[in-house]
Image (cartoon, rainbow over all chains, first blue to last red; front, side):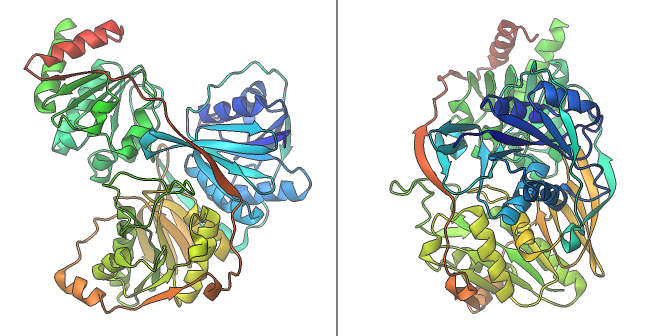
Length: 323
Length: 255
């Protein structure tokens, strides 16, 4: 088994640029030396050049989904191309909302298993395997596909470093969405974008994460202030997102964003598996928690066993004094 | 308004997870509990039925050893009955197989208007099963719902996105996966717990669903310990610990 034909589920930002996640997967796909195809949700537009520069020789685009959710729509478009004879060995998806939904629909259409939450893919002789961290990253599990291609796998953000320089133009081919029947019933009627200021959570050099140890929603203000002072982004554990203190877009972890900043400051976060998966890859970790047994201290470079309500105001004051 | 809720019974997440050394799959032979992330779907379903003024909530689940303790929790919350598929041949099943089994269980659960599931389980977190069930049943679906309102034969959902949320409408019947926090799950009352003991749980095998052979095209070939992070410096706050943080940040040149 060689991976001579790999597809990458590809997305663009609302502004029309290639998403970083797509470029990560295209770069990894290119490393196998076979042909790489970007399968784009919507239209490639100006992003086509970036897709091509990261290795995509061919670019399929579904065109505007006209309000349909991507799950059934893009999976049907993919199935139609496969039925027409261009059958990939592997389709790489990002582990995000749309990637997950499309992969799930396609797995049923093709009757193929899925491997999810992967951080690597490898070929060894005749077998293709994916690696997945479990138990909060304490163990790495390798699972091997045993059936027929196409193999379907989803990868966590930031599993691979994007690298351009492939050159080439990339041939853009239309892959329209067929009639979906009943499965296409869901329609988006309005889109709401939450306003954010400062650097993006998954791109910031400094991330300050707040958790249940803050005690109450109002105290998240300290996290916002510290993030602003350090020109970073505020983040949150699932516990306080579920509690409604901050919007979901703040969530760092398994179901939220994966961050790998220069410094991650965990304030009042105990370090549940769900959270650790999203921030363990940070280059430096500072943790402040009053429970010295908290798992977060197991990954901290600097751990302060203390009360966030005392340490954070002191820290803010000291930083303000420096100007 | 009849709602089916897919629920998973999982090992207590408060206990350290363990792999079965012979199969390298998650050990699931002890007592299982209702996955907390499914309690939101159960609560949402109960509220929708209550708002509609008629109908009931039915649970579907797949678990080893005829396990029902997690189902009893959801029945105690107010669900009326459950269909449980328990079959040794399903041990270690992949997400696609699980979806086919649950879709089969749905067919045994009676008439329905809506199927609700969590976005992902807290133990396996594949996150594909709700959408796979929808495809097996040929239904439309909306994933990552943070609110659900039923309006006649349509469901209106606020669906979480990377940058905010979308308003989505979808004709019924449909599959909707809900995020944690969509509603606050109730605690079962004592009366509810007593009543749950007598509620019907229909326990079936794969063959009962007409699914004669099960197999999945993946196998775990290796498990290793991840490289450990080097231990850091842990200090008790003596009132001056913030200076340590300032020095640490200074050293990294982020201030």
